[in-house]
Image (cartoon, rainbow, N blue to C red; front, top):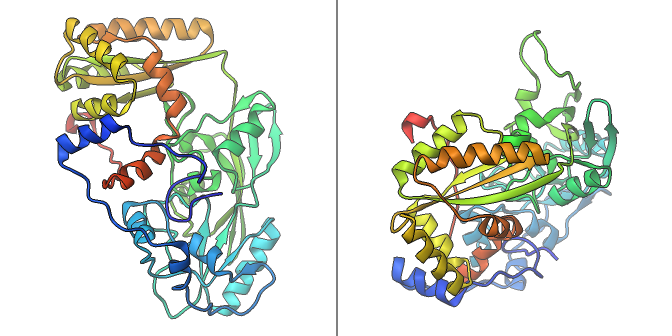
Length: 409
């Protein structure tokens, strides 16, 4: 069962290690716990719906509550305190493009505000209803998650927009394929949402961001259906796909998504390298990226994040031994952890690893093998659950993204 006031499945719990709590207390001070509102308390605040009855729309208070907020820090505080603010007046769960068109036609007649809803992981506020004189209808696509077709020659798969990350990968892997798109919200976020939010995955170096993966599809609008064919390239003006990517549902509701898929790789490994300091780490990762070494994933933590990650990793005795080894090799206080992945054939991966090692050693990099890389891969979709452990200890955490040129880092 999905949590109504936080992240993910209620059955998944990631506790904050005791030594991790001590580390945080030393670093930023003791936590301050806040009281949580109960589900019953919040349900009592859900007002009566302003919508007329419709066979495809639920006016159930809990359904409306569960579709009122995303996953930003502001949403988290609203859910935990019980001060949700505005609730949608109803939630629809269409199972086909025809039902989406029916709902849009009805919404137009009733002069409603319509909010498309995928996995509810938004941190930008686009799924949150705003106060308005008009009733609000949230349209959830969770029942449209099936793999519709695979073009084995073109390597294009067609999905319903509501397929979440596990649904996308399980349906493709059963046929020997992968999309390779792994945002940290992968467990809950949807394919249609990835397009609408211009998503980036953790292994975009190999598979591409959603810009490279999104091949076309269909969008239901108040004016009718917009069909975007999966042309590989065009010299005939603007690319209509660009209108949809990052539009957050402003132009219509995505009812079908075509994506470019890949055959499953022969092997995949992740490695952790410790750089002596931030300056050498930045120079090394920039050289690695600009040399276009064929890696699948590349991420760099600064000294503060590296220290925090090691403190919260668990296995303190093993981490202590690692710290001693790194110190002997010149990576002491101020060290930065760089994690990278190689994905492909055995020959390709061997060449990529050799090139990455040679380049990073020139910047003082100390390789620690695949152990930390394996741990990262095993737990990469469990990290958001740590928000609950931190909250229970009296800490709030949030994430944000930015992009800039290398010269401005």
